[in-house]
Length: 183
Image (cartoon, rainbow, N blue to C red; front, side, top):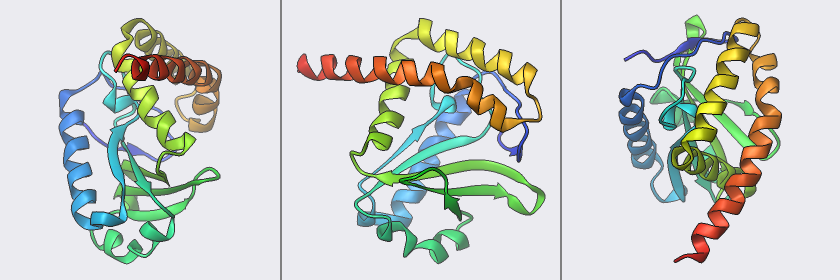
């Protein structure tokens, strides 16, 4: 299994079933370490979406009632290879793991408040893309184009996906609400 990428670079690989297993394993590890201080933990991001290529970095969303619930575990997490990085975007705490001394990241752990827009966006986007193959394939093609254009500029790569993701998040929210109405 190929996992890990040098910080700042963009490299895409075809979807690998092993990413799903690594995501499950990482979720179990986090659940065991943090117990009742988390409300949920899910494999998210492109490595969790069938049919598309992805950077070989496993993204995990962790839900908490408050950020204090996770920050008090920083030392324990660090001893287990999960290191606090920063508040990635407002309302999210970012942790990462990998061979960090050599700039290789294998996992991003995005900590968000449970049932917040950020949590719901991670889950809805993943579920929508895994249910709507045409949109997922279109997303994969966009990612390939941006990777070719920005192989050493992850910020531009991310910015290039922004409008597409915003549109898909709107679709995903509508789809999720319609699915909830069917039950």
